[in-house]
Image (cartoon, rainbow, N blue to C red):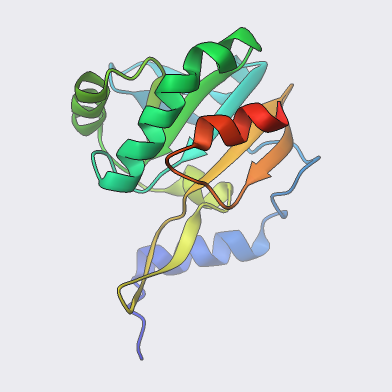
Length: 167
């Protein structure tokens, strides 16, 4: 079995190797990314945030996860949290996804996957017997800049319930 690793992937692996472990109790890595309307967002802009990383707009699992979060949005928002999704898709893709699924929250574009890597949400994946590098589905609960919970095992269909259970 061979794994195809590009120079791009190698840079991220080296960055991940040398960075602080992403775990509960540590400061969330800072970032600035653009949303579908070209507005820049920073993690520092939010006191309480549910930050979720997902592989690709409009795929079955990512759509199920986004719709679950959409359906639980008012309950999560009532607790003072904003929801932000991050993937490697561009602004046009995010715009279509938001409109088609009627998503009330922000989706940010991380086309170079640097923010995904900083959060440990970029790495080796396996699908249908093939190994490749890609965005790993993960969710972080962040309060006052500190990671308070990490979901490594996301149930795409009931993710809002997973989050509400720990909030």
